[in-house]
Length: 87
Image (tube, rainbow, N blue to C red; front, side, top):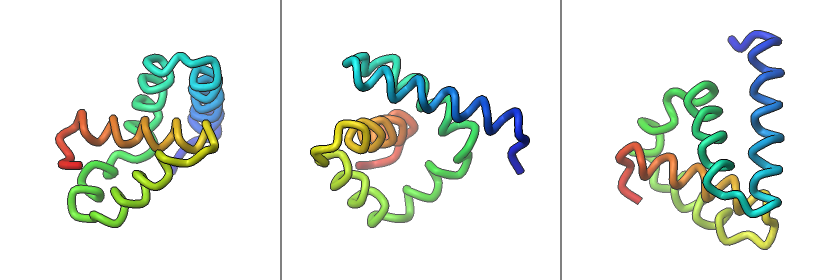
């Protein structure tokens, strides 16, 4: 279970990552989201290794016209690729 302090910290990180993407700072946005993924979704890598539908859904989201959705999906896909998930 995530404590109230951890949740507030994650919300702050998420807002900062979104701000990075909106101003075109992809590298820092991705780095911030990697920290969030490690904290919130420790089993994400293992889950997606055995779940091709999750990868397909992320690819669809990556191609969204909504910059925030696209940025989030791109960050998740990069995170997964960097951790050895075959995309």
